Length: 495
Image (cartoon, rainbow, N blue to C red; front, side, top):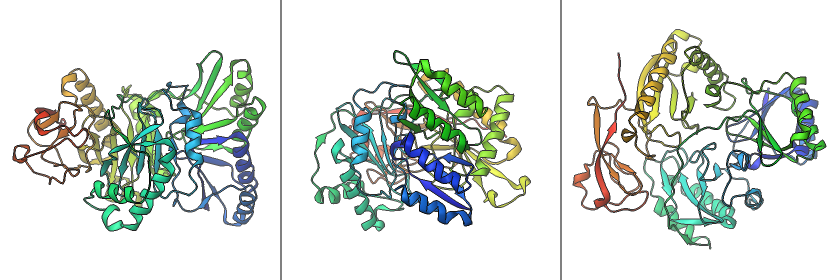
């Protein structure tokens, strides 16, 4: 079997185009397809059917990758525009104009997301463009390839410059891999100087630092009303598999009712917008025909699993069942299961495999590490290890303990820090003492923790704050005088 990957730029696909892809796949014996964390389409095809499929996709002018993911899909938050939130200026036309300007196939992961939503991740790309309050201008945060080092571009980026700037940054990174690719320390300002020298871009100073909303995950299934007389439909599949005839029938209804596009999400689900309430019966008929359930529990919908990972999906479903049995609250939490390093998943709680357990059938030898972000914001990269060497039978109990710890913090809001984005993924066990002394910026609430130092300002881990002669905030550039002593909560430990 071979894996076919088709990028759907921005997670947007015309109903007619998707129907053509599905027709070619069905002709090649494909019965089911799935969507990925970056809004792409996957399906598997048998060796003897591959030549016919390749020919049909070529004739339909559909680009694809075979058993590869060299060119990641461009992720965008347009799928939920108008249905889950109302943007200030970032509309369909802006997204499409930007996507149309990409005249090359990126090898870096690119995110285009609005700053007023939390449904889509902010920092899972290598080039993370986040809409600012200034019309047609974006913040840019670079997460250097194969690292968690995050660098904020010192100016806003104009919409029409995004494609050219992305191309220039990508060429520069690959031209100097010893400086910018999979390195323990990277000077982002050096990249900025090289890129600025090689291109002419509109410069807009940053007058207001990025403020991200508190994380919540909207329920994204079923029929939902919006606007005057419109509905949107969300479809999630527990096994991640979408039946090809079912999707073809959806496309037919889209074309019949003049619903031009379908949208994929980073939760591997499908969203259809612009359904006329008077035509709902047509959509209901398709759901009934294929026995599609569109009302799963909320605590099943807030999980991230690696693309095409049967092991992670099985573990997710097992843990969801256990959490349901115990009636565990997971509101405002997001879970991720990682079996491979550097897979770009995001989560406020991460379950990570240990000892290469996916290569063994010995369930008794399975061990996991449970981590959480210090502020339980899934967009943060400041991880704390909650438990290590956890046997599989004990995973659900540990997760319940961690959820209980989180909601305990919510009853003491002064102990919950704002979002912080440090460069290193920390997996060491927390300190024995109940609280840790740190310094926090009073402008943007960024934290300086001497345990980690500050890679942006070239400050080594273990450097005391008092020993810094001068210092400025890596996020908002506030001076050292604007940092005040604070105390961060520590994880609860039990034997």
